[in-house]
Image (cartoon, rainbow, N blue to C red; front, top):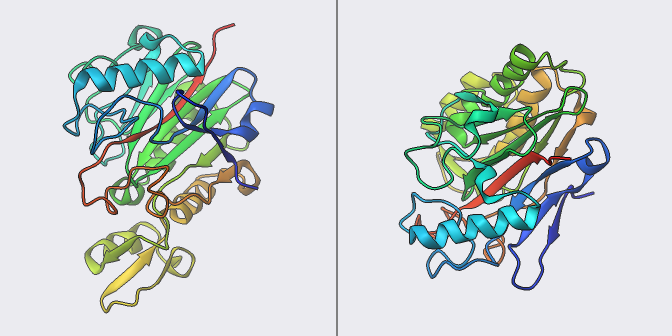
Length: 278
């Protein structure tokens, strides 16, 4: 069953909520946005949530406010990083709440992973085909996000997130839950041999599970979702503790922004995760 359930209401930010986790972690909110229910104008229409794509910053801030309030968080809870397709993970403390909400300069710099145990903090990251990764330790009250394009994937950001949760919060790998959200699928993600060399170095001997032949010579269809699932399992996450979406962002331009499908000029969806204050 698809774990990311679409929730589209008139005039509200479109969202796909990670439904199964509501039953294992009271107070958690986690999911992925669509592209409707915001104020951005074309080509960013309508719920662009990123400040780095050329959209009017005031439109982006209004979109962020709308999403946070729809999720039951204060807008000032919005916390994010400046993503660079690497594997750095920041631990978000109470005093870090709101970093990156109003401007890029205040965000965690050169950071693609965020993890916290502080209620009332809304962790977010941004996408237009890359893979959103979600982590939760319901025993110790820890949640995290990671942004995994192909570069972050081969740098094993999923494993880095798990190690950070273990080191900083005492999380047990057998108790961590993980999820893989909407992103470009193997059906649409064609890469060249330069990328595949890096992929094989990261996951040697597993190519049959995450790659297939492309109709074009010298190209390969790459399944980043499956790559990240394999990395999570190798890092100690139980396969039964991993949720994985079937949504492809490139196949559904009516719901999602896609960097590839829209030739690089487009808005960004956001992943989010947070623990609501009681």
